[in-house]
Image 1 (tube, one colour):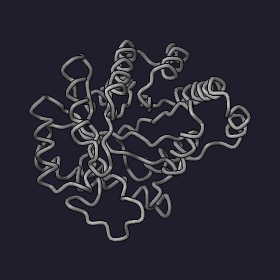
Image 2: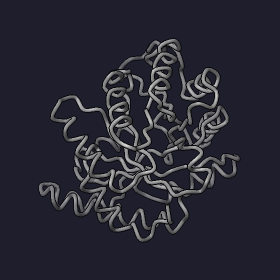
Image 3: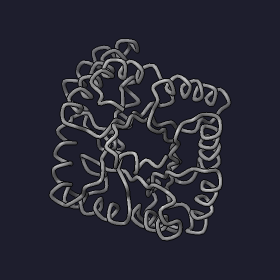
Length: 292
C-alpha cells in the first residue's frame, strides 16, 4: 500500500517508527515490539537510516524482514548526503526489487565539527525527492520531514516554509513532523503551510517521554521545546523511571486528544523500539480516533 494514496482517501493513519538495532538482543527486542504493535493494525511502520549511511545494511535487513514476515506496510528512511547518486539509485532499486513502495526522503545531519563536508550526491532532501521521481516515476510514495519549530539550521520560519515548499513541489506526497510537545507550534506551522499553498497531509510526530535525560538530548539536537511546566514535573521525579514514564504518557495522551479535536490526519509514534508507552497512549485515545 502506498502511503500517499492511503492519506488521499482521508483514512486516519496510525504509524510507528523503529530504528535498526546494533545487537542480536536489540533485534529480538525490536521484533517483539513489532509484534505487539502489529495488533493495533497500523497504517504503516518506518525504519530509520543513519545520517551518514552508517545503518545502510541494517536498515535494509530490518525493512526486508518486516516486509516479508508480517503484513505491515513498511516505509524505509533514506538519507542522501553521504551517498553518490549512483549509490542512492542502487539502494532504491534494491527496495523496489523486494516490493517496498514507500520512502521517507531526508538530507541527513551533517557531521559535527566538519566545516567543509563533502556532499557526494544530493545536498538537500529536495534533490533526493527529485531524483526518486525522475528515476522511478510514481513507483515510490515519497514522504519528507517537516519541522513545526523550524529546522536547527533555519534562520527563521519564512526560510523553513520556503525549503519545505520546495520539497513538496519536487514531488513529496506527505510529511511527518519532527517531535514537538507544544501543539501550538504545529497549528501555526499548518497555517503557514496553507498560506504558502502547501496542501499535502502533515502527520504529527509524537514522542512519549519515558527517559527524560534521553529526550532532553533529542530535543536539544532537533530544536524542540519541552514546556517548562512539564520540565518541572519531570525533574522532580527524574530518579524514578516509572514516575517519569507515567507523567510522559499522561502528557502525550492529552497532547493527542487536543490534536484529534483539531482534525489531524494521523499520528506517527516515535517508539524507540519499545511498545509499552505507545500501547498505553493508543488505548487511552482509541475511542476518539476516527474510523480507520
